[in-house]
Amino acid sequence: MTLLIRDIEAKETHLIRHKVLWPDFPLEKCILKEDERAQHYGAFIEGNLIGVLSLFPDTDLSVRLRKFAIMPKFQGKGIGLAMLQFVLKELMNSKTQTLWCDARSNALNFYQKLGFETEGDEFFKEHVSYYKMVCTLNFMK
Image (cartoon, rainbow, N blue to C red):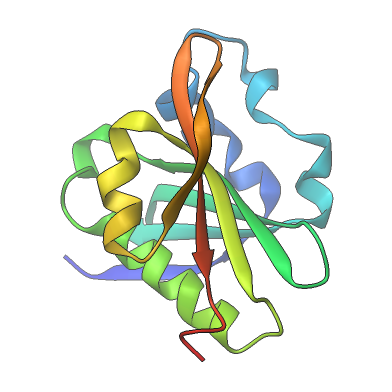
């Protein structure tokens, strides 16, 4: 099983976002007007797209990670970890100093293992619990 991570187009992210993140909502919930200015990445196994994540410019020095989703069959196999490590490596070669995301509460440990820290209090979106997680990249450079 060979994993390939590469840039993809926004439209390639929509179906996986929908299936994994918000299957009980219309597909349109997973299509963001900001997608056109984001950088999108896909994880492929044997040519099949099995994971997606998107990076949205936030400020000159900050990027927001959004819509990070791995197909259920491939969760827990290190795909998400590989994707995020790939992105962190890419960002370390840029002027970006901070990567942040709204992480579902059940994923806090995943992000903490990669150097993210919780910032602020728990909040909810559509009855799902989240925390803001921040990774300072300049200490890695």
